[in-house]
Length: 341
Image (tube, rainbow, N blue to C red; front, side, top):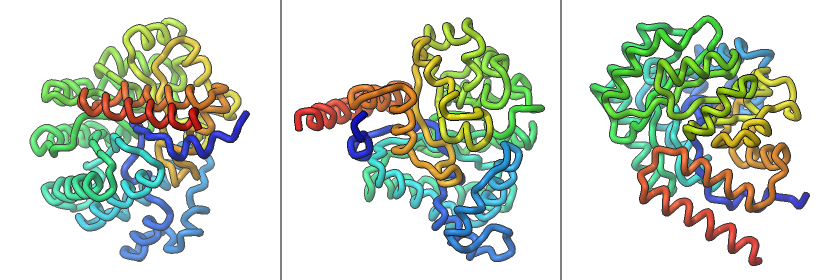
């Protein structure tokens, strides 16, 4: 295969499954740790990179929450958000739906109005200064239970920031059944928000069915186990319910044993709308460009195939129709120019 990294680096992209705090680079995490020296998180970027080494999904959650604890003030929120956008701009990510867990910040004492102002200020600056369009998904931290669900939907519906487009559910799946969150998703959907819960990452396909039937899922975060159920795959394909696939993340959290065993090939073969994403990129030692390179190897893609992956993300996004048309045209123009050269 030719070296596709240069093509990927310049390819205009959209990202749909990427977490706010989980996108903080070691440099930013170290800066935040220096602001809050009572934390156990290292203050040296190289040490932070070592700190992001996980034994299993539960250990990942512990590390993730320790980084969440570094975001304690509105200025921390604004710094984190804008710097994440800066890293996206370096990868030619034009549009991203960033998953934010406001409950984690408001329960730590950040004023809810100040929190909304911080993310919106960063969003506007990112678009004006970096050319990156950001939108928000507010997600429930499932491990925090129904109290967190109530608070998250209240913040989403009552204080709805201009960039908010969707409502999600993250955290551990084992022991956190999806159906209990139905009333909160019903309220969010009634307010016009799209449903994008995590499901089927560390549990079986029944969790994906629950997300569809109980939570009205329009996209599925991960959905790794969907390939165990041919009926589910057919349903996802027929209804264009996209899967937000994050290959390196699945290996890092041990959701999948080995990259060569990743089920993305079966998803694509079944006609499912697959998007490629980085999840918590610095924590997993990756970025979206690397995930596209991984996908190219797993799916045996050339430049046209990678461009189609990029267009899949545009199709599955909640960008407005005019914005989708512009970004798809930009992908086509870039690819045509590249191949002509």
